[in-house]
Length: 468
Image (cartoon, rainbow, N blue to C red; front, side):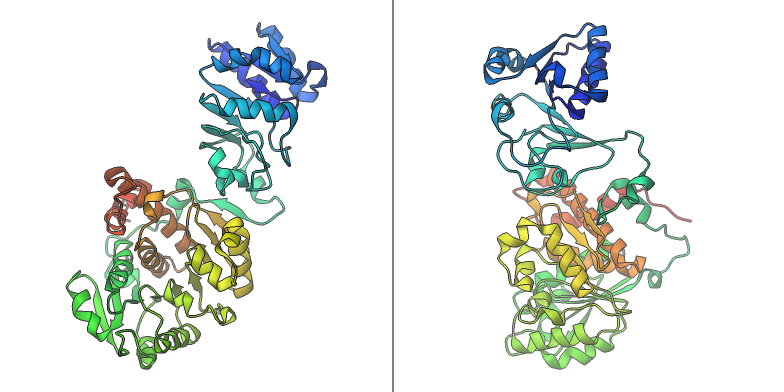
């Protein structure tokens, strides 16, 4: 145990005592003097003497160097140096200790937070423990779930210390929640034995252009695999034969097209008149001026909820204030960092520097739901509630995975009739399916089609199929 002088060190003393009582050899190194330990930490420190444990005091670099060989021979190191009270950057003895521990290659288990990581920031200044596992108390902290600080946490374990969830929910501050298996399971609706396709919604996928029919197919596939009762692809007339040959389960709606093989503005009324519960629009539409005008007309005049991705977002980069939700028409946007940057008129690096804040701000100011894709996908709503997803892997950084997610969100929206719930469940299952596919295919070989093939497995893993 590498223990500090405060409460985090006190937790380390408790761990040392517990291990000793279970017959596991434990060594305790206090980075400071015994005289500096106060409160409950002091009480737990004094108990160590009663169970026969000696505490080694290390107050300077020379003493650390003297005992470093003992630390290096341990099988596991417990980081109980500093916890949620730390801010800023390590220096002096603590900086030296952390750098040396990181160089050992010994598994490190951090208590609450890796030393050197600030509780209120996802940025890391200077040295920080590179933990193999972090056991955080009561609830996860922002740096444990948001990059780049999340890379220091290793495997994350949330330890229940008896604080009721209702108490945590009532704390002041903006709402931020992890998408967990337990909470996502509660969202999935049971299907009645006498269900029919009309019960599960009609999704219209407005997508595709000549050369980009695959994007339309994947969006529609995502909707079908997520349980939509009826799925129709509205696409340029010349693309219909191609899409019709891909999958028999979805229908097609041929639209007027430009000379470039993209949807023409003249098709707007046909799409707006189509009987759908949700419209998913954007994948593979292209940038033809007539197509851009078509997209803008549909978004501004639609009377049903919208899920917008890719070129449907790019159509508003010159005037993002036109991309706004309104009463009775929920709008969900699903940008990757580049698309978010274009909507904000900011560099991608700026978006990535604080994904949570940018998603929240745009959702609130435009009255939309934002699904900011990427590592640790962020979901933010117009009421400032935000969620972070932990499922998924680097193999999903490949073409078509976002198109698949667009269709998934639309399908779950058509069934749940709740924009926030649809975003949460779709994002969680999308990542879970990616994890299952990665286990079969590797993160190098993974494709969007592989993910689609595992969506049923992901749903079964979340909750067994139920009928009422």
